[in-house]
Image (cartoon, rainbow, N blue to C red; front, side, top):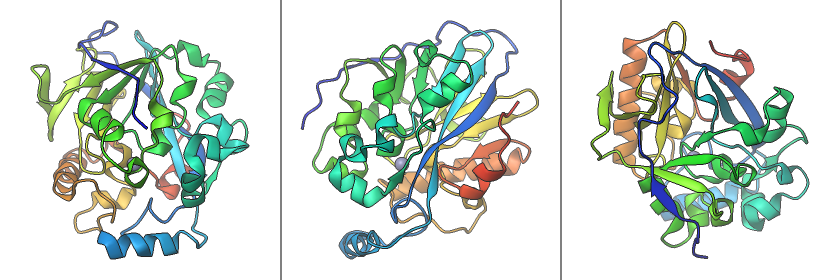
Length: 301
Ligand SMILES: [Zn+2]
Protein backbone atom coordinates (compact mmCIF):
# COMPACT_ATOMS: atom_id res chain seq x y z
CA UNK A 1 0.00 0.00 0.00
CA UNK A 2 1.15 3.54 -0.60
CA UNK A 3 1.03 6.15 2.11
CA UNK A 4 -1.18 9.24 1.86
CA UNK A 5 0.13 11.00 4.96
CA UNK A 6 2.26 14.03 4.25
CA UNK A 7 5.19 15.62 6.01
CA UNK A 8 6.58 19.12 6.30
CA UNK A 9 10.09 20.08 7.36
CA UNK A 10 10.55 20.90 11.04
CA UNK A 11 11.72 24.45 11.65
CA UNK A 12 14.01 24.81 14.67
CA UNK A 13 14.52 26.15 17.23
CA UNK A 14 11.00 25.50 18.50
CA UNK A 15 9.51 27.97 20.98
CA UNK A 16 9.68 26.99 24.64
CA UNK A 17 13.41 27.04 25.31
CA UNK A 18 15.12 28.91 28.11
CA UNK A 19 18.69 29.19 29.29
CA UNK A 20 19.94 26.55 31.72
CA UNK A 21 16.73 24.51 31.62
CA UNK A 22 16.91 20.83 32.52
CA UNK A 23 14.37 18.04 32.03
CA UNK A 24 13.29 14.79 33.70
CA UNK A 25 12.68 11.49 31.92
CA UNK A 26 10.32 8.64 32.84
CA UNK A 27 10.70 5.32 30.98
CA UNK A 28 7.44 3.46 30.39
CA UNK A 29 7.35 -0.20 29.36
CA UNK A 30 4.49 -0.63 26.92
CA UNK A 31 4.35 -4.40 26.53
CA UNK A 32 6.81 -6.94 25.13
CA UNK A 33 7.76 -8.83 21.99
CA UNK A 34 9.02 -12.41 22.06
CA UNK A 35 10.63 -12.38 18.65
CA UNK A 36 13.97 -13.79 17.55
CA UNK A 37 14.66 -10.73 15.39
CA UNK A 38 14.86 -8.17 18.11
CA UNK A 39 17.86 -9.03 20.20
CA UNK A 40 21.24 -10.65 19.85
CA UNK A 41 23.32 -11.48 16.85
CA UNK A 42 21.12 -13.28 14.41
CA UNK A 43 22.50 -14.63 11.12
CA UNK A 44 22.24 -12.37 8.07
CA UNK A 45 21.56 -12.92 4.36
CA UNK A 46 19.10 -15.28 2.72
CA UNK A 47 20.18 -18.24 4.85
CA UNK A 48 19.81 -15.97 7.84
CA UNK A 49 16.26 -15.03 6.92
CA UNK A 50 15.30 -18.71 6.65
CA UNK A 51 16.94 -19.46 9.97
CA UNK A 52 15.15 -16.51 11.52
CA UNK A 53 11.77 -17.77 10.26
CA UNK A 54 12.55 -21.20 11.71
CA UNK A 55 13.51 -19.66 15.02
CA UNK A 56 10.31 -17.60 15.00
CA UNK A 57 8.41 -20.80 15.79
CA UNK A 58 10.24 -21.24 19.07
CA UNK A 59 9.34 -19.49 22.27
CA UNK A 60 11.78 -16.61 22.99
CA UNK A 61 12.17 -14.68 26.23
CA UNK A 62 10.08 -11.47 26.14
CA UNK A 63 11.88 -8.18 25.63
CA UNK A 64 10.53 -4.84 26.88
CA UNK A 65 9.27 -2.13 24.54
CA UNK A 66 9.98 1.27 26.08
CA UNK A 67 8.66 4.76 25.42
CA UNK A 68 9.81 7.83 27.35
CA UNK A 69 8.06 10.82 28.89
CA UNK A 70 10.24 13.93 28.97
CA UNK A 71 9.00 16.76 31.16
CA UNK A 72 10.38 20.10 29.99
CA UNK A 73 9.70 23.04 32.35
CA UNK A 74 8.59 25.40 29.58
CA UNK A 75 7.76 23.26 26.55
CA UNK A 76 5.63 20.78 28.51
CA UNK A 77 5.40 17.00 28.26
CA UNK A 78 7.15 15.38 25.28
CA UNK A 79 7.03 11.74 24.26
CA UNK A 80 9.84 9.69 22.72
CA UNK A 81 8.38 6.77 20.74
CA UNK A 82 4.84 5.46 21.19
CA UNK A 83 5.20 1.78 22.16
CA UNK A 84 2.42 -0.72 21.50
CA UNK A 85 -1.09 0.44 20.61
CA UNK A 86 -3.82 -0.40 23.17
CA UNK A 87 -5.66 -2.60 20.64
CA UNK A 88 -2.75 -5.07 20.82
CA UNK A 89 -4.04 -6.21 24.22
CA UNK A 90 -7.14 -7.69 22.58
CA UNK A 91 -6.62 -7.90 18.80
CA UNK A 92 -2.93 -7.55 17.83
CA UNK A 93 -3.36 -8.41 14.14
CA UNK A 94 -5.35 -5.23 13.56
CA UNK A 95 -2.30 -3.10 14.38
CA UNK A 96 0.59 -5.44 13.52
CA UNK A 97 -0.94 -7.55 10.74
CA UNK A 98 -1.26 -11.33 10.92
CA UNK A 99 2.32 -12.02 9.87
CA UNK A 100 3.67 -9.41 12.27
CA UNK A 101 1.63 -10.82 15.14
CA UNK A 102 2.89 -14.34 14.44
CA UNK A 103 6.48 -13.16 14.12
CA UNK A 104 6.75 -10.63 16.96
CA UNK A 105 4.52 -12.44 19.50
CA UNK A 106 3.40 -9.26 21.25
CA UNK A 107 2.09 -9.15 24.78
CA UNK A 108 0.37 -6.08 26.19
CA UNK A 109 -1.67 -5.93 29.39
CA UNK A 110 -4.61 -3.51 29.33
CA UNK A 111 -3.44 -0.29 30.98
CA UNK A 112 0.22 -0.70 29.94
CA UNK A 113 -0.08 1.24 26.67
CA UNK A 114 1.44 4.72 26.62
CA UNK A 115 -1.85 6.67 26.68
CA UNK A 116 -3.06 4.76 29.75
CA UNK A 117 0.28 5.27 31.49
CA UNK A 118 0.23 9.00 30.71
CA UNK A 119 -3.29 9.28 32.14
CA UNK A 120 -2.20 7.47 35.31
CA UNK A 121 0.53 10.12 35.63
CA UNK A 122 -2.13 12.82 35.35
CA UNK A 123 -1.27 13.78 31.77
CA UNK A 124 -3.96 13.88 29.09
CA UNK A 125 -2.41 12.27 25.96
CA UNK A 126 -3.91 15.20 24.02
CA UNK A 127 -1.59 17.52 25.96
CA UNK A 128 1.51 15.89 24.44
CA UNK A 129 2.69 18.60 22.09
CA UNK A 130 5.64 16.75 20.58
CA UNK A 131 6.25 13.08 19.83
CA UNK A 132 9.83 12.35 18.81
CA UNK A 133 10.12 9.06 16.92
CA UNK A 134 13.58 7.46 17.06
CA UNK A 135 12.48 5.45 14.02
CA UNK A 136 9.32 3.92 12.56
CA UNK A 137 9.71 0.21 13.29
CA UNK A 138 6.46 -1.39 14.43
CA UNK A 139 7.29 -1.42 18.14
CA UNK A 140 8.00 2.33 18.13
CA UNK A 141 5.28 3.58 15.76
CA UNK A 142 2.45 1.26 16.82
CA UNK A 143 0.51 3.83 18.88
CA UNK A 144 0.96 6.88 16.60
CA UNK A 145 -2.83 6.80 16.04
CA UNK A 146 -3.29 7.83 19.70
CA UNK A 147 -1.60 11.22 19.10
CA UNK A 148 -3.70 13.05 16.48
CA UNK A 149 -3.08 16.47 18.05
CA UNK A 150 0.69 16.18 18.46
CA UNK A 151 3.52 17.23 16.19
CA UNK A 152 5.39 14.04 15.29
CA UNK A 153 9.10 14.41 14.57
CA UNK A 154 10.90 11.83 12.42
CA UNK A 155 13.95 12.04 10.15
CA UNK A 156 13.33 12.55 6.45
CA UNK A 157 15.42 9.44 5.69
CA UNK A 158 13.35 7.31 8.05
CA UNK A 159 10.08 8.54 6.57
CA UNK A 160 11.36 7.67 3.10
CA UNK A 161 12.52 4.20 4.20
CA UNK A 162 9.19 3.42 5.88
CA UNK A 163 6.87 4.76 3.19
CA UNK A 164 8.61 3.75 -0.04
CA UNK A 165 10.16 0.57 -1.40
CA UNK A 166 9.05 -3.03 -1.43
CA UNK A 167 8.36 -5.41 1.46
CA UNK A 168 8.06 -2.94 4.33
CA UNK A 169 7.07 -5.82 6.65
CA UNK A 170 10.44 -7.47 6.17
CA UNK A 171 12.17 -4.20 7.03
CA UNK A 172 10.21 -3.81 10.28
CA UNK A 173 7.57 -1.29 9.10
CA UNK A 174 3.78 -1.34 8.89
CA UNK A 175 2.43 1.54 6.87
CA UNK A 176 -1.05 1.41 8.40
CA UNK A 177 0.52 2.55 11.69
CA UNK A 178 1.95 5.67 10.06
CA UNK A 179 -0.67 6.64 7.49
CA UNK A 180 -2.60 9.36 9.32
CA UNK A 181 -3.28 12.97 8.35
CA UNK A 182 -1.29 14.18 11.37
CA UNK A 183 1.32 16.93 11.73
CA UNK A 184 4.40 14.93 10.75
CA UNK A 185 7.58 17.02 10.65
CA UNK A 186 10.84 15.79 9.20
CA UNK A 187 14.36 16.63 10.25
CA UNK A 188 17.29 16.54 7.91
CA UNK A 189 20.78 16.14 9.36
CA UNK A 190 22.33 17.85 6.32
CA UNK A 191 20.82 21.26 7.03
CA UNK A 192 22.17 24.52 8.43
CA UNK A 193 20.84 23.96 11.93
CA UNK A 194 23.03 20.86 12.35
CA UNK A 195 25.94 21.00 14.81
CA UNK A 196 28.22 18.50 16.47
CA UNK A 197 27.72 17.90 20.18
CA UNK A 198 30.32 16.10 22.31
CA UNK A 199 31.09 12.88 20.41
CA UNK A 200 28.03 13.13 18.14
CA UNK A 201 28.78 14.45 14.65
CA UNK A 202 25.28 15.62 13.71
CA UNK A 203 22.79 16.98 16.20
CA UNK A 204 19.90 19.45 16.17
CA UNK A 205 19.19 21.57 19.24
CA UNK A 206 15.38 21.36 19.38
CA UNK A 207 14.66 24.43 21.53
CA UNK A 208 17.97 26.23 21.04
CA UNK A 209 18.66 25.89 24.77
CA UNK A 210 20.57 22.61 24.82
CA UNK A 211 17.86 20.88 26.86
CA UNK A 212 16.86 18.41 24.12
CA UNK A 213 18.95 17.50 21.10
CA UNK A 214 18.19 15.11 18.25
CA UNK A 215 21.25 13.10 17.18
CA UNK A 216 21.63 11.37 13.84
CA UNK A 217 22.37 7.68 14.61
CA UNK A 218 21.48 5.79 11.40
CA UNK A 219 22.22 2.15 10.76
CA UNK A 220 19.73 0.12 12.80
CA UNK A 221 17.21 1.68 10.40
CA UNK A 222 17.98 4.04 7.51
CA UNK A 223 17.04 7.22 9.35
CA UNK A 224 17.37 6.34 13.02
CA UNK A 225 17.81 9.19 15.51
CA UNK A 226 18.59 9.30 19.21
CA UNK A 227 17.63 11.98 21.75
CA UNK A 228 20.13 13.67 24.07
CA UNK A 229 18.61 15.48 27.03
CA UNK A 230 20.07 17.52 29.85
CA UNK A 231 19.23 16.25 33.33
CA UNK A 232 20.17 18.24 36.45
CA UNK A 233 23.73 16.93 36.83
CA UNK A 234 24.44 15.00 33.64
CA UNK A 235 23.17 14.17 30.17
CA UNK A 236 20.93 11.27 29.25
CA UNK A 237 20.95 9.67 25.81
CA UNK A 238 17.77 7.92 24.75
CA UNK A 239 19.61 5.72 22.28
CA UNK A 240 16.56 4.06 20.70
CA UNK A 241 17.55 0.87 18.91
CA UNK A 242 21.03 2.17 18.06
CA UNK A 243 21.92 -0.19 20.91
CA UNK A 244 19.64 -3.02 22.08
CA UNK A 245 21.53 -4.00 25.21
CA UNK A 246 23.57 -1.89 27.61
CA UNK A 247 26.68 -4.03 27.17
CA UNK A 248 26.85 -3.09 23.49
CA UNK A 249 28.39 0.16 24.73
CA UNK A 250 31.48 -1.83 25.67
CA UNK A 251 34.10 -2.25 22.97
CA UNK A 252 34.27 -5.68 21.39
CA UNK A 253 30.68 -6.72 22.18
CA UNK A 254 28.57 -8.50 19.54
CA UNK A 255 26.71 -6.55 16.89
CA UNK A 256 23.06 -7.38 16.24
CA UNK A 257 22.33 -9.43 13.14
CA UNK A 258 19.67 -7.15 11.75
CA UNK A 259 20.86 -3.76 10.55
CA UNK A 260 19.58 -1.64 7.67
CA UNK A 261 23.12 -0.36 7.08
CA UNK A 262 25.99 -2.07 8.92
CA UNK A 263 28.54 0.63 8.07
CA UNK A 264 26.37 3.44 9.46
CA UNK A 265 25.40 1.25 12.40
CA UNK A 266 29.04 0.86 13.45
CA UNK A 267 29.70 4.57 13.00
CA UNK A 268 26.70 5.51 15.18
CA UNK A 269 27.68 2.90 17.75
CA UNK A 270 31.18 4.33 17.90
CA UNK A 271 29.79 7.82 18.64
CA UNK A 272 27.80 6.35 21.52
CA UNK A 273 30.68 4.28 22.87
CA UNK A 274 32.94 7.35 22.88
CA UNK A 275 30.25 9.38 24.64
CA UNK A 276 29.90 6.64 27.25
CA UNK A 277 33.70 6.62 27.76
CA UNK A 278 34.01 10.38 28.05
CA UNK A 279 30.92 10.85 30.23
CA UNK A 280 30.61 7.63 32.25
CA UNK A 281 28.11 9.28 34.61
CA UNK A 282 25.67 9.95 31.76
CA UNK A 283 22.61 7.69 31.40
CA UNK A 284 22.32 5.80 28.10
CA UNK A 285 19.14 3.83 27.48
CA UNK A 286 19.35 0.61 25.45
CA UNK A 287 16.44 -0.16 23.11
CA UNK A 288 15.27 -3.48 24.55
CA UNK A 289 17.39 -4.50 27.55
CA UNK A 290 15.29 -6.39 30.17
CA UNK A 291 17.87 -5.94 32.97
CA UNK A 292 18.26 -2.20 32.35
CA UNK A 293 14.52 -1.47 32.60
CA UNK A 294 14.01 -3.79 35.58
CA UNK A 295 16.47 -1.74 37.62
CA UNK A 296 15.77 1.71 36.10
CA UNK A 297 14.35 4.37 38.42
CA UNK A 298 10.81 5.59 37.79
CA UNK A 299 12.20 9.00 36.93
CA UNK A 300 15.64 10.18 35.82
CA UNK A 301 16.24 13.68 37.17
ZN1 LIG B 1 13.94 -0.96 15.58
